[in-house]
Image (cartoon, rainbow, N blue to C red; front, side):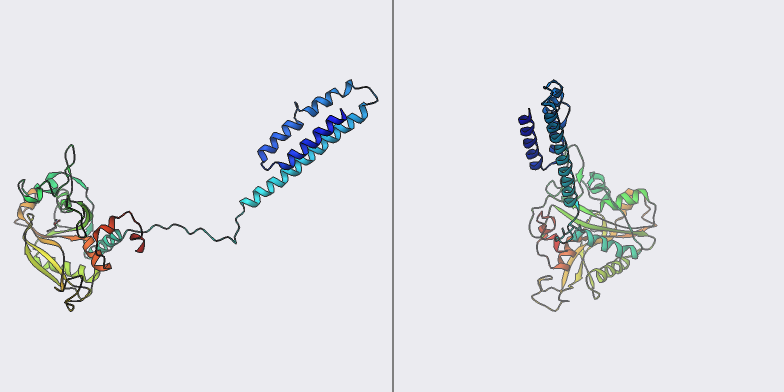
Length: 337
Ligand code: DAH
């Protein structure tokens, strides 16, 4: 029995020294010192030994039990200390750079433009991207046979509805629920079935503006656009109106800003192509038919409305020559802002 006890002791001590997990150490304790361990079995048999062998076997068994218990305790303390050391941060290591989010350049520009209009007394409102034909077309005096309703320009949704092709929808939604006077801007995303190239995208962004009151004039429109241009692009911005057609305004214009890059002085300017002017959007005086469709009295109220291409301004400002970059999944572009 002495030999077996000695063998057990050595084997168990070797296993305890080799273990490096607290869980495995606990399993060793159960295996070697637990109630059903071989050592306990041998101790239970001590009484059956001849009397002259009993003391030696008894002290060997007791010694083995004590040695194993000590080894287990020591190993446990060592493993716990190692685990704690691992959990304490090593302040000398280089840190992990935190991933900080930031606003998309179109988003921050929309916010900047919105706050310019807020200072001019406009309220910022929102409208749905999924629209119906009534708000996208009919109420905007765009009859069913108008080319803008052509399938090629509009994404129609299965089961009815469409993706708005312009933020002008929000003019209608606001006037439907608010009596005049109103002064709102509505930034947001629009969609058109356009072939994608460097200056066209199927998803793009506009800010819609609408001001309705008694005696609002085209001069108020121009003053508002000048104030916007001077704050967002160039303090010397001038605004030019070119006659145009929109179903929901009369008269209608396209408006240009004087070139903020060359101020009309560079025949080879890549932003204005040497013309001195850059096209920004469409605008006009709200058509009486639009007022009638929302229940405003066109005899009492007049209003101006405008649309701004947000990409357009961002491209001018940052010298970006390809609109596709804004929605590209390659983040190297957006990370520059
Ligand atoms: N909705 C027009 C477009 O997407 C832009 C526009 C023109 C908006 C005239 C207006 C406006 O509010 O009065 O081309």
